[in-house]
Image (tube, rainbow, N blue to C red):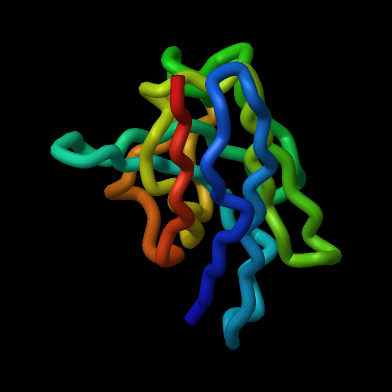
Length: 131
């Protein structure tokens, strides 16, 4: 079992930046082997996969959603059991609840993350961007 806790959400002006953090804990001895991903869900919209990083911290451009490519970055620190999402040049359409997810052992880095591939989810952190 893996427990995830996001933090760092805030209300910001358009053009601003944020760093979201997700710390994981639990009884799973293999948690550092999982791919980690970030998703978001805006009111009335489906959950959108944003970015994914493998167990070693590798990612590539294909692993990002087109809507955030070149503006968001993902990284992880296994020693701290944490994964981060760096958001910059924020737009009002980035307003959503942001979730981190874990539990995928061999997800692809050639596409944005798919929610069906992840077992564990955090409660989310709210990001609000005003114009």
